[in-house]
Image 1 (cartoon, helix red, strand yellow):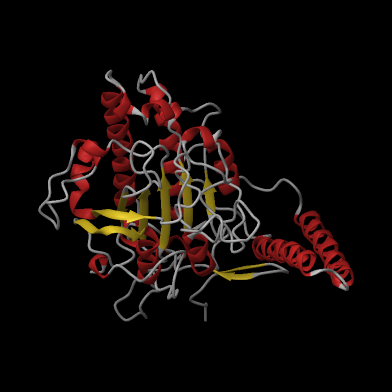
Image 2 (cartoon, rainbow, N blue to C red):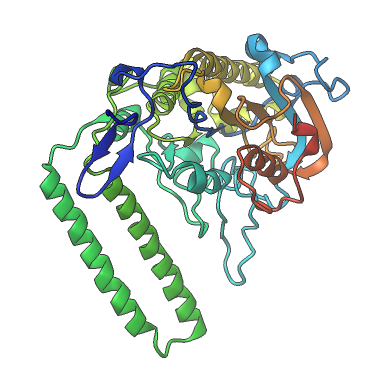
Length: 427
């Protein structure tokens, strides 16, 4: 009797495929219920904030009966499917040029005595530890070159690992495409040998660390423990690589991007690659640290993102251009939601129904760090969508992130500086 599941087998892995009709499976009324579609989490961040006068809805108009302001007008066709949240901030944030560094962590940069900077784990990486077990990549970090000039601040992406160390991102759509879909040129045996060699090196290092640790001071022991944790992180990644070593990458559902996209095209390509990554179930957790300056140049704005962020000090046209930037970013986001709704996954459901997306910035407007612009969309986390929610001033933004985690079934006790979930968000 033929088995109901197909398997990809290798010397290092045995991975069950989902029920795919192209492999001969069909849905029957008497068949056992199919597994639930996987849940996914995405965060999209822009630098330098928004135009406060025309991006935020009127605080007197809450619930479902609110008017979209001009900065969000391009999202009108999706108004019933996203919620705008006001009143949140990260209470420890104190750098007006850092739109992303603590956005997903809520960390206190001075929490370690004697250090001028430290961070903690970002919410996407908390989710990746749960949602990324069955995918080739536990998470994927996308970015843009010169991120500090784009208003994002320190870091290699939006993501920070369990030790508060930056997680590397990929800054070009072509590189993202190859990471997701390009086949390995080296033969399987050669790649297995390379993994074995890397593991052997780590084994030697681990043994050396145990010997070196004897007789060290507490400070040196702490430094060595941190180094040892980085070794364990590498071991985890190597184990993940070994699991997928003999499994071919998915066929790309889109063409390879050309070498020099910029501005709006770059953002749209990154959005398309995120859709493709979910469609092929290559990863279920992604972040994207978006460009600003190239988008401004693309739409004919004669200012950098930083100069534009000081629109309130100018008697000229900066506020008008700031509003144009907001509308452009909202229009690109609206197209992303279009594609989430239009794209089916292997289970036959729309990506939109099984994803939660957080969109915004740690910078509010000008260089203020209160009332972080925040939009939530997607059906995965059982949230109230179509609402304008105004929370008490300085509500921890991490309360929102904790609510998303709980909505995905990840029962974290707290995240960052959170004080609890946002009950008003829960459907």
